[in-house]
Image (tube, rainbow, N blue to C red; front, side, top):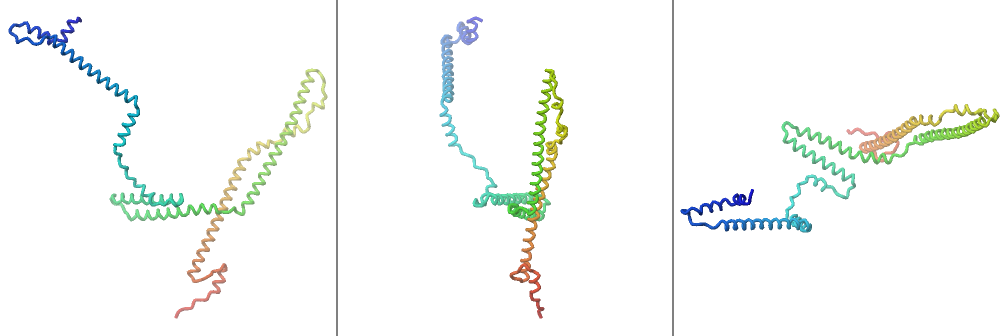
Length: 319
């Protein structure tokens, strides 16, 4: 493509005007195409300059944002200060903790929180049951009362049981168990010491046998005949070789000893529980007998109950 072709494609209007100017009957001549091309070129240069300046401004703004992080933080702070925060959602569980005083212990506060949470859950279920057709509220209330009674009894029994377990003294049968365990421990120590002594004796005779073997090899190499008495083994050698392996025996008996120890521990726990039950039953009998005596009119009831009953005056029949 030549420069003339490009100009003809760019300025077809100018060519038309130039052709139309040759006709004699046409309108008065318009402006020259040179001025039109100049004006269009000046407009293009102006638009290009404006676009370049706009691009430079945008680049300067971007670089200014990148180079100055303080401006970003300031704008972010302005937006956060002027922005209105959303209201906090309602929390119905804060009312459970508001009624619990901080002066109570952690266990008591936990108990109060559990009671309040159970109460809230029951109220919600009751409200849900009201909307459910063919739902009996009376049976639900009965079940709620039963569950509350069980929960209160359990909450009172757990700390009492913990205090009782702490206050239980060691039983009278515990020293006998300890004595038996001490005897078993002594027997184990005696067997282990005996095994160690046998091992020491065996190593001693093995060293002697190795020394005799070295002497025999030396005599065979040099051709010196050695005394047969020194080569004979000791009379205790077969006895030492035939001794039992006490270490393996003790290792085999270890599980049985462990089970015996666990059985003894469980028996001690059972005895402690029985003693606690005995004490509770005695206290219960004492309380019931005192209450019955107060209802019957006996004052200062002594330990001899039969004597007091026999010495009490007979009731006179009212006429």
